[in-house]
Amino acid sequence: MTNKANILKRAAGSTFLRHNAIYFGGATLVSFLNYLYYPVVSRLLAPAEFGEVQAIISFFLQAGVFLQVLGLVTIGVIKRYEHGPQRAEIIAEIERLALMIGLVLFALVVVMSRPLQVFLNFSSLVPFLLFALSVLIGIPLAFSNSYLQGHQRFGWLARSNMLAASSKLVLSVGLLLVGLRAAGAVLGVVLSQVVALGYSLWRARQLGRPRLQWWVGRPRLALIRPELRYAGLVLVTSLCVNVLLSVDIIAVKHYFDPAQAGLYAGIATVARIIFFLTGPLSAVLIASVALGQHVENRRLLLRSAGLTTLLGGGALAAFALAPMLIVRLLIGAKYLAYANLLPPLSLAIFLLSLANLLVYYYVALRRYAVAGIAVLSLAGTSVLLATQHQSLAAVVQSLLEGSFGLLLLVMLLGLWRPVAKGEIQHG
Image 1 (cartoon, one colour):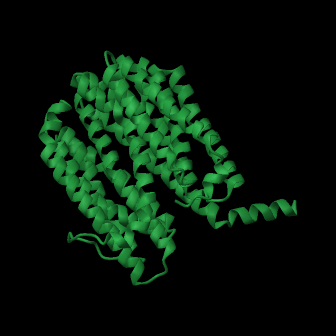
Image 2 (image 1 turned 60 degrees about the horizontal axis):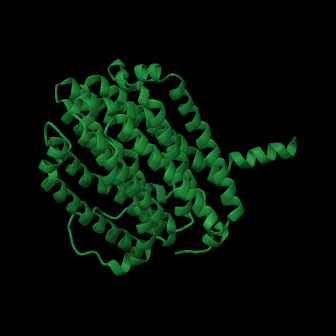
């Protein structure tokens, strides 16, 4: 009994376990708040308007990928360099690079707002302009959050993310109630970034975060080049997985009328609960895997896969057994016409969640071949959607085939080459 008590005491005092518990617990709560946004907003908007909001949120996810990548690089710099001017200088150059990319994206979205409005059957271009603004606001927010994470201030990081998620819900609902409709729902997202930025920037400055890089200049790539190869791997894989998660919504928004697209977006929102539930497991896994620790890494992967199957599989079973009840409770009765799509769409998202876990695992091990697999899977799924979209059921089938293909290819990657050998490659 004494030995068991000592083991439990050591586990409770483990910094690693404590950080992961805070991270996972905070991420789970944030995922819940982020998901709550959808059923609440869907009840305040017509299906066609909700389809527009869902499509714009998908763009938010894609644009945020490059910030996540540069944020991971920033965390690596914080870990690698001691306190001093060199670390601050490198982080400043990374942020300047991010600002340049952000300005390019901002200009691109502004220029393309009208063609995007026509291509995706939007009633207004205002949501696209708000999305462009959010890209710029997201740059200092991402770097401040990365600074908190790099210094292992997971409690502060969790509060920043919770502020963003909760204020997004409150502000969007308030703007909807005063009559701003779909544009109000998107504006609420943008304003929530401002709220989170204020808190995150305040906390990061307490830890010595360099001042914001408001001026644009050519970044000194020689300083940050050693960090960019791994950043490229994370960028490609993260972007492909994020696009796969929402490519069906974009396809439906283009190929179908706004009312059908809005109803499909509601069903897709319910199915994506599975990804919200299991996403934090992938984030914890990539933070836990260490190069050269083959046995321990395998154990972590199996545990993560087991939890993903338990959480995602449980939700999948519920959605398959009672799709009508689930849709009525979570998104509203007006979406029941397409409730039959929930089981196969949920299966596609479950397979994508498992594939996402494996992708993150091989990214942590710096297996660069996983980037090629992600690109190939996204291309294949896009071709399927472009050629098989005669009905919403055909769209779901295309996504299901694409998700299964990604999972199969990533599983084969583990057989193609011994993992232990890949773990000692530092890229």
